[in-house]
Each structure stands twice: as C-alpha cells, then as structure tokens.
Amino acid sequence: MSTDAECAVVRLPSVVDLKAVGALQAEFLAVRGRPLDVDARDVTRLGGLGLQVLMSAKSTWRSDANDFRIVEPSEDFLKALQLFGAPHLEAAALEEPRP
Image 1 (cartoon, rainbow, N blue to C red):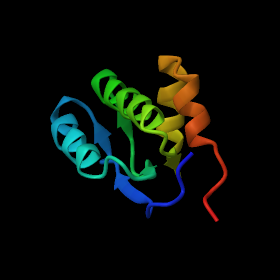
Image 2: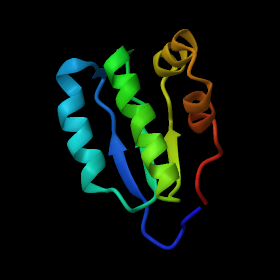
Image 3: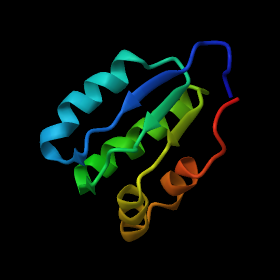
Image 4: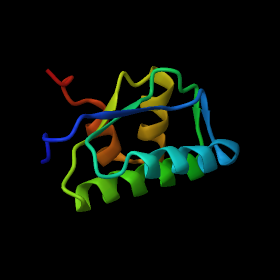
C-alpha cells in the first residue's frame, strides 16, 4: 500500500445517514489519491446509506492502492458494523494506529 503521500483524515459526523452522505462523499473525493484515516470517534448512529458510502470509499482506496483505515471507532460505530455484517469495515476499524 502507498505510504508516499501524506495521510488525509476525514472525521465522520455523529449521525452518518442520508443527510450526511453528500458532504461525506465530497470530502472523500477531495482527498482521493492519498492514504486515508476515517475518524469514527463521534459516530452515534450509522445508517445503511452511510455504510454504503464507507464501503465504496474503502473499495476505491483499495483499487487506487492507497491505505484506508477507520480510526478511533466509537462503540456505537462498531456495534453498527456488527449489526450490518460488515466484517471488512470492522477489520479496518480495528487496525493498529499509524506510527
């Protein structure tokens, strides 16, 4: 995976639902091409559309050969991933912090 470019950080809002995904997609597009840390510390609710945006972003970063990690996931975020059955995103949320 790429480590040449400076890592970007996108911080998720507390509620990641239909109202939040437009702005979230724009933030992801603005940092495409760089390794990405998605900060999930504030998430209290993750909706299905929010999950789809995160899955799409992870897939895009993988196809671009850039790192994609979810950092500092809240308990609510982790529970939502488990309920949705999204183990690949759960794994991204449980990786070790960058040095």
